[in-house]
View (tube, rainbow, N blue to C red):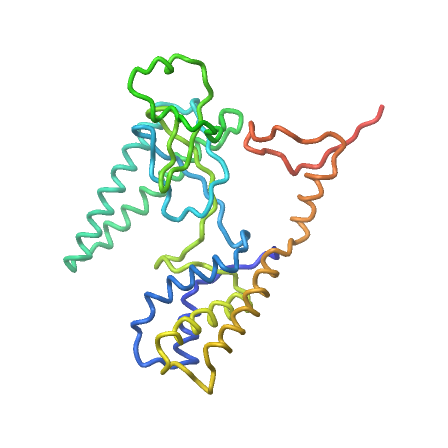
Length: 294
C-alpha cells in the first residue's frame, strides 16, 4: 500500500452536510456504523493498525480488545519482573475506576477534565510497562492454537490429565481468548481499525476512500429518507458510484509500495527456506539473505 497519512471519517460527515444539506442530524449515529460497514466491504488490511497489548487471564479466559479486527499471534513471557507485573495490575485496575468515574460525571453533567488528565498519564505508564513484555523476542513463548475438541480449560479441577506434559495453547471463543492455563498474562499482537478521539474510524487521506464512504452512506440514507434525493440521484446511481469507488479504494490500498516489494522479495527469494519462524514471533522474516564465499 502506498503510505498515506490518515484523517478522521468525520470529514465524510461534513461532506454530506455540505453537499446534501440535510435538515436534521438524526442519521449521524447510523452513519458511523455505515462507515465501519463500508471499510469492511473495502476489505483492505493495510488500513488497519498493528497493536500489542498485555491481557490478564483469569479462570482460563480474558475478554478480547473491543477494537480487535483479527489476531496475529498470542504469546507468554515468563521473564518479566514480578514488580512490573504488580504495578501493571494496579494501574489497570485504576484505569477501570477512573473510567467509571468519568462515565458517572458525564451522566451527571459534572466537569471531569482533571480525571481525564490523570487517566492519560496512567495509560502512558501502562504503555511503558507493556513494552517490557515485547522488548526481548527471545523471552516470548508463542502459544499454539488449540486443535483438540477437549480443551484443557474445560477439564474438571484436579483432573488426572493435569499432570500430563503439554504445550500451552489457546482458542478463541466468541469474544474471549481461552487458554490451557488458569491464570497469568498473555501478550497479544492484533490488527485494529484506528479511530480518532470520538471513536470515528481513521481512514487513508485518499480521495477514493472519501468518495467510497460518501456514496455508501448516501445509498443507505436513500433507502429510508427519499427526501435526501438531489438532482435526480436515485439509489441505483448511488450504488453504482459506491461500487466504483470501493474497487478503486481497495486497489489503492492493496497495491504495495517499494518497501513492501523489497520485504516480499526478501521473504521468498532465498536459498535456505526461512521456516519455523512462528517460534520467534516471525522476527527477521523479511531480512535479506547474504551468501558468503571463501
